[in-house]
Image (cartoon, rainbow, N blue to C red; front, side, top):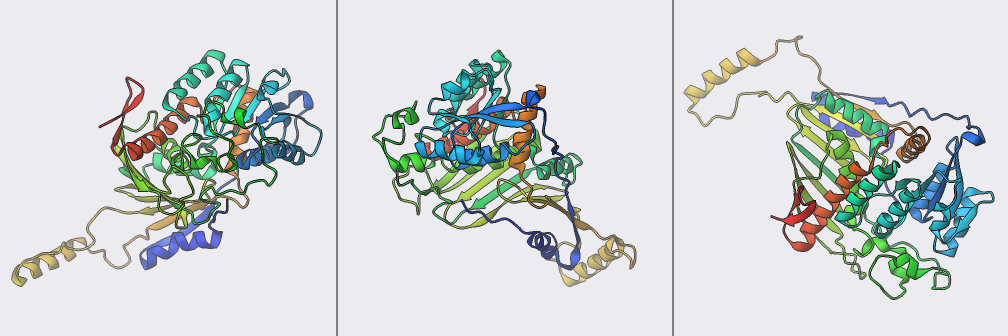
Length: 452
């Protein structure tokens, strides 16, 4: 997938240009997470197995093996070409298999990376936990609502670590944004809006299909797993996000990043109360059953959220966090690269427009200016401040490092199963509202989605 990222120059323009002469702007670099460069002793290394070497999996594999004290001990995929790709990425002999159970049975493997299609998350995580393995599972954590609660219970029962792969809680940009919000830089947050647009076949999941893909090179029946039975389909395998049988469409691929960031920033510990979606399939009529445009309004206790994604027009991701003290903007996609703050004082800067006779309006305006106008030299410059991630920064790298450190030290995950479940339920609520043409309501007591 090709995405646009703001350059530092564009970021500076974004943080200063819109304010005009009324504001002064400054942009400051953030420090990158300090990951050691010295490799650990082989006896102290964390050894992982990876299941799924697709677009996301190949990136996770490539980044993980570059981390100090981390070693890939085995790789699994159901397609011959991706088994071969794993060997190419690792660059040295490694055990490969088409049975993920082979990795779970090995005593020398500490943990599992599971970047598999969403419909396989539950079974794979449950099997890994029962085998005594910690698990890094890609977002969204679940494909169906009930799955999350059994995964949480299993993590507790087996005393294992689960980390979900939305990397916002590990991002230095989100760390800065959270600290700013906790200092009440925009006051009490009442509204958050996030928007993102893509405008390319790849951005709409029309991925290339390997020319050798066939029932001979892919174990199709195992890939289907718990999904409804379907005849072999090259498109469904390569572009699985386009079907609800295997994924959640834009909510599970893109909404989940915004939701993860918002839950982290706001300290959210439960699913939203309500969700109302509107959208449609306007362009990508290739047999998919998910929309290519979706807007969802969420009700959370104390604030509201609106998310919007289109696969038909390109737009950099931006999240706006609003309160009476101003607005915070987080710019970027998946690896956010900047946060800015535009302060506001919430006061009148001139007398309100008055439909009064002139003989009443003139004295009132003169009195207002005499009482409120700043005297020359007494005003203070209000700054719109911004912070940006260092060059080549990767929040995915930090997120993986945090997971492997949790495996090694047994410290809690930065994005555990409870957190991941809340974000996943919010995704399911958006889809429930869209497909059922109703307002989705979270029933916390029954742990299910209902309609208003």
